[in-house]
Length: 268
Image (cartoon, rainbow, N blue to C red; front, top):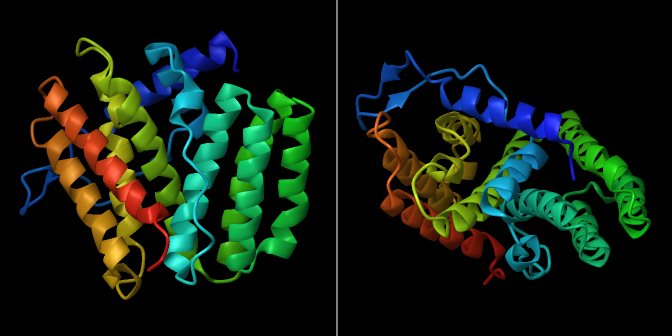
């Protein structure tokens, strides 16, 4: 959906991101190279998926998730699901599937309402659905990103930093579920690093998660998210100078699939 120059720029950005953690201090507990402060931003989700699609010749429709359950009274879970729905919207945008986008868009409306953002986000989300219906894909790509930023701004205005962080966590968990699924099916080792985007992506996810209040992180679901991020980071960064193994990719796919299934489960 994007031009070749943009794709090249995205690829360069991912490569640069994977080298951003050089010169870090060693963790006393895990033996990993980690950074107490990472001065970086997430790679753009749309660009990340574009690189994956070109590399793996992705059949995006096969990666769609079924609809999530009704919004949970657990706001942490609902925030994670909402983030994963934002990731899903980027995935559907890559496929150019108008109806699927509108279906997911309606789920986002439901989850925004649950988090007290329905009235403020409704006009924007409805406009996105209309863009998909009219197949205004170029404009929609930018609108998805701006809608995400607006959602974050509103939550922080409401002094709900935890939910803002959880939405971004859910977004990247879903993106890594997609990336690990695609890369696991590729032969050879030259593309395996794209399974996690970069080592910087994992560090950003860990840093973000650690900023969530300790009380919030005590819940069962968030403990699972925490252990998934820790185990995945150990898997990829214990031997950073070696080529990623097929085992690392397969384990990452399993872990990301398991945690996303837990996030999307109906509340018991």
